Amino acid sequence: MASAAEQMASNLSWGAFGKAKELQQRILFALGLLIVYRIGTYIPVPGVDPVRLAEFFREAQAGIGGILNMFTGGAVSRMAIFALGIMPYISASIIVQLLTAMVPSLEQLKKEGEQGRKKINQYTRYGTVFLATFQAYGISVGLEGQNLVTDPGWFFRASCVITLVGGTMFLMWLGEQITARGIGNGISLIIFVGIIAELPAALAQFFEQGRTGALTTPVILGVIIMAIAVITFIVFIERALRKIHIQYPRRQVGQKMYAGESSHLPVKLNPSGVIPAIFASSLLLLPTTISTFSGGTDSSGAVNFISAYLGRGQIGYFLFFGALIVFFAYFYTANVSFKSEDVADNLKKQGGFVPGIRPGPKTVEYLDYVVSRLLVAGSAYLAAVCLLPEVLISRSSVPFYFGGTSLLIVVSVTMDTITQVQSHMLAHQYEGLIEKSKLRGKGRKKTRR
Image 1 (cartoon, rainbow, N blue to C red):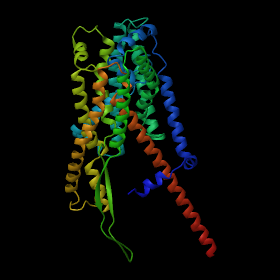
Image 2 (tube, one colour; image 1 turned 90 degrees about the vertical axis):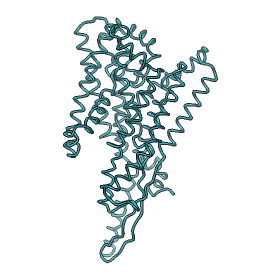
Image 3 (cartoon, one colour; image 1 turned 180 degrees about the vertical axis):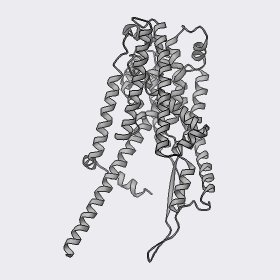
Image 4 (tube, rainbow, N blue to C red; image 1 turned 135 degrees about the horizontal axis):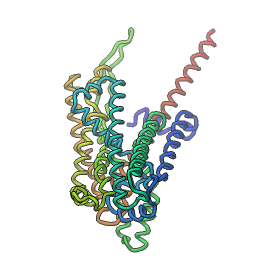
């Protein structure tokens, strides 16, 4: 049976949306910043030869360069100021979160509330600058090695590093502003918009391959059916919940005794959402960003090793990608999305308990047990959605945008954003009901006088 909140959400209409002025301002603010991001993907880094760069990416598009281009909204193929995208920030966030779980001093900072969170965010920004500088320098050297620069030298390298690092830091600021003053998760929305913006070109390329005979009709139909099936599966699993029964004891207010209430604690089958796929992709792209532009200029063999074992379609790529997804599904759930200790502590403060389970450490153990069992299926679902389409697509010349990772990001971010819009509209509706009840109360007082 649907809850009261779900029933109210189903009754929301465009009329209610028209009255929610704050929500409209948030959406317009987020759209404005996302438009700024898209404009930045067309502003090129100075000193790069656009003709040679286009030829280079026509060859690299079939490899890992295509994935880089997808996650940056086409900025890599144009060598724009946002060519690094938001991935260095995501990689720095992963490293800081891992260190927080292992280093006692950082763990203590995490427990200090708002001040500790600000300090950890500051460390994350420092890490972003370091990783972005490392990647940007590798890209500048690689561009020179591939003869894609009009005037190679240290001046170009310095300007390229400053431009790319500045672009990444600006994107990080955009994402934080969208999260705080807009709607949805800013970082996820930036990646989402980058994928959606290049999707029409990918569709045109896909059907052009069918017209020229590069792809047969059964392959085209199979990819379309696979994409629809994956989207349906993602929507079904992302809405799947495990409801833990919560009981509240009887309480006395004044002279009245209220009976004990019962409720449910909803736990998603995939509590971490799309974050493990984004984290895994980010770490996988960290070494391959440099290998894409280095080509054969590296005589040490490191680039050849990355291309041979971590290139798209290779067995090492699938194993490493799948292992990272499973790891981050557990890690992000335990440290961010569902902290059993915090949930148990909140239940204890509110007087709630799981029937048959004592409040405190026993409740923590029970919640950990339930969540860990859910994550067996949840992490397997994430790995299957991200890997199975990739295995099929890597055997044919199908654009990356039909892969499981891109579909998972698009569908999950869309669902999360719609949920936040509904939450804001419900809050606005509740505020309207409260104001009406206050006005009615004032009217009754006046009539009594």
